[in-house]
Amino acid sequence: MKQIIVMCAVLPLLLLFVSQFALDQQHATTNNFIYETIDVAKEQAKRDGCFTVENMDNLQEAIADRLKVKKDEIIVIATNTPKYRTNDYQGAEQIYYRVEIPVKKIMAGAGLLGIEDEDNQGKIIIENSVSSELLAP
Image 1 (cartoon, rainbow, N blue to C red):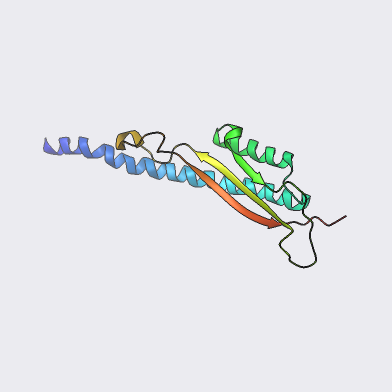
Image 2: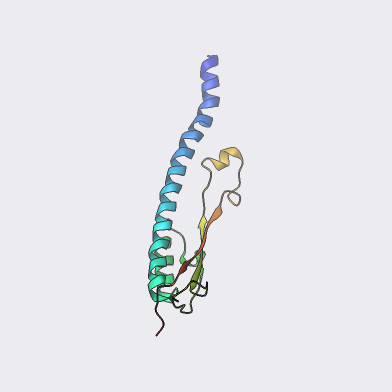
């Protein structure tokens, strides 16, 4: 009888580990998708010399559709004036971008552990720069 009582107490805690592992796998898949999507937008920006409005909208829509978040929750801050490639590196041709994506559920079983919904969320922030490939007219 003691074993059944102990098992009833321990089993939910053990299930937390399994469900957290599954959630971590989902987060890894999501991160891979986000990096691939940003890489596509970055390559387009390299060719255009900057992040165009259309490029940023496509980036936001792709991420919002996949992650089931609102488009306006995804923040994209990027260079939107054309930068031109130079013959030698000066840093002036760098295209800056920063993408912030909300993550709603970080911990599995947060309610069981006493973690509030406001504390069980965060942001994925990807910030970098890339050299422009646009030639000066």
